[in-house]
Image 1 (cartoon, one colour):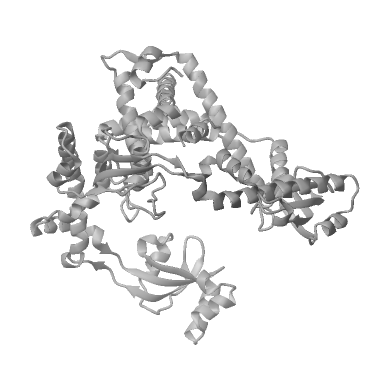
Image 2: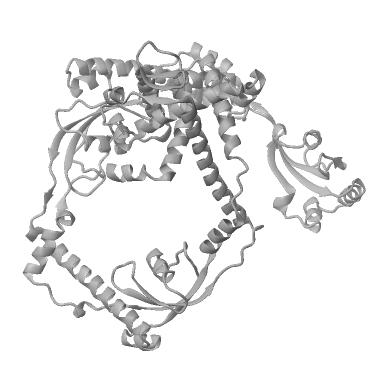
Length: 629
């Protein structure tokens, strides 16, 4: 799996994503990374030093936040194998160089502008979408930041972004490139095809030696997986919360503090019909007064019932304040006089009014109790962590530790890396995917690093037993081996026959004659695109069809492996490029974004060359335990 991750990390897409992750998580993990340290510099960027301690702490925080926000566990060793540690250092170097460039250009952002940026961040908004100072303070606290450090890091991030955005903004891809991509995406082909399916009698019966050879050469198919018994202790805020008692006095104080969270403003179900003028609206109002149904009138004007409905909204959710004031001044089922809104003249009707409601303490007591329990649990979980780590340092067993902290100890039955027991059924493992992944990279007798959960909890685990994987005896899997051998032979026969038929078709044998030999029906499919599949044509068949010219012949294995498709490409449609179409605009944006990103990366590299960058590779090896990259 690590090999796959490592290969994926080499792609340009992964590099772009890593850059975005470093940029976004940098807000929470690198706020003090350019304060000078007395320790030796791991890297020097112009006149700024990045110490080994700054890198280590920042990278650790980034990994922790990454795990909490994605729910995926990644250890420092895995990060090193993927090269994420070096990419992170490169991100710190890039940011330092851009900071130096911003200083050189005397760029600045005003306090008011910075405040507007922070207030607009959804991370700090309450349930109504408004900036919440309490939420702001809580998020900073959870991430170990104070307000001054956060403001400083946001100021730097904004200035860096201003430089990068200026470089990559407004890049326009040439029409020739856009047209080439458009035509490649939208080329369509028709095809005639038939499917030949060899019968089992078309292949010889396997000998005993054939089956043993199949078993020996494909031993992985007949190998029982490795099983492990794992002991797990999980301390999550959700696990600790139910046992925490909340006194009535605290509930009252919390209710007073969070009272607005349990307030629901008045809402109204509103119908609206727009008109081009006040006069037309007045005439319509007269018809309604005379008995014409409001929605019937809306339908006369080409509106559906859904078009005429604004929904059930609170006053602050209506964009036009003039219309909001008018709607909330009506009685239920009353139709308004013509209202001259900001965009049009409308008639309004309120069909339902739900009064505002302030829930009482008794009404929200269960919800508020759970909320306070969880808040306290988030603090208590750190105490539990310290207690368990102290106990582990004293070499106490998991059984004793679980009793000491009053948490459940889970000892799994033998389980494989996919979470299945020996009976093939799912095994219940706390924090399952992460615990299994790490357990199968550990061993018995090893003290493992604690895992962190997305909700801020901790998980400890140890491997108790290992049952190695082993090839199942031939006699035990003989029936499966024979079935696999026959399936493989059928695939080989199908492909070979399809290949021969395509060769004969290319040499002049009629398509109908070939289908007759195969006793197969010729079918037609229309409008295939290069990057689309259908029930009849999977990606392999589509790819084969688009590799030949018009009227050319191709073949591909069927998805079930029991036959092969013989195809003849028919009409080829090359679409006309319309630079004003929505798809052309989408292609243009994708090309521009990609090229713009490359320009920004090139600019950042030039800035680094200008200010000068030095990395102490000997110190790097000491810090990461890796060879220099």
